[in-house]
Image (cartoon, rainbow, N blue to C red; front, side, top):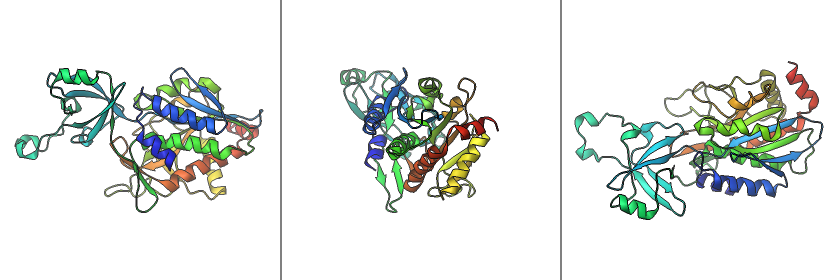
Length: 352
């Protein structure tokens, strides 16, 4: 799990993915794959199989939800705006890190002690625009001396931990360092294996702020099919939906989200591969979010696309949870798909 620890504990807000990109570059180079990038910062490794086979795009995304410094008050507090989707209720009293050019500073999202709350405040949900971050500065001048500026990214703090059941992983940024991890694992597992296609496996940038990297990345390789490697929402907690995604019951195959209805023949092929190889899987149908596949499937004339990932609890907050077994089976499913996706199967997808 050393790679996943490094990926989750390293910071990478949308537009500030440089440190994550460096890890991805190192890992891709270690697989012996050709390195490909676009001008926004997305990065992929190319693993060639049979030259006449289809080109397969596999993509996580490097960015995590975070914030940006929007104002420094005269008393030295920081106002902030979101980078990605946040629910204001998860923020108060949480520790964060403000990342500057030369140093990282710890802060806390300020909250009132219950002793001084007025009755009308006790049940109020504070909007983000009223919140502030306290970094322990005396005034605006001291913040300036420390080198903190408007525009600096702010990230949650949550150390990686493997829970006592030796399967549940707790960490920040599993959305979507889990996808980055899977993309690397697929390249590693394909090393020395013949496959009837060319694989481009890596990660995009700025997914959390509008799927922006997904617009430019396909121009690197002009793919025939695409898979977004991402997470879905687990609903297996108290008050959840027992019929929805759960941790530990296999990778998640998305049948519908707000950005895409996947190519049905491609979807059916993936189900067939999972069942043939005894890989457990779950189906996700949810209209509350989208992924990079929402842009991939609209590339040029359109390409068969889908989302494969893992169920995750508490995403878009300071911490999240996934299953280690789900992560392993996700990589296994993608590898087995790559082994069988030849030019004839691609043609059958396009002729469906």
